[in-house]
Image (cartoon, rainbow, N blue to C red):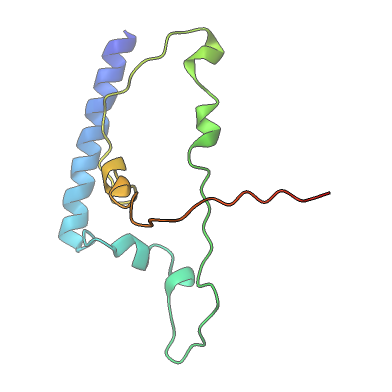
Length: 116
């Protein structure tokens, strides 16, 4: 039953995603930066002649570190591989991020140890 429920729920989510994509397309909400420009008007709305701030916004992420603590080993179970993919305009694929991996060359980490 769990497998059947999981499969049915995945189908439901896929239908919901496709319907939302069509609605967003019809409303013109499918441009690449639409959410960034429109999702939080107080944060990103600029007035004419508004003075520039040193930082226009602050964001934070935990890199999914909090979720990593909930591995299968905590529950004495074998890890299950999730092969599903998520279509989202909010997250970048690893390949997209990794293409910048070698962009800064010659930078060395400097370890500063205080001399006592």
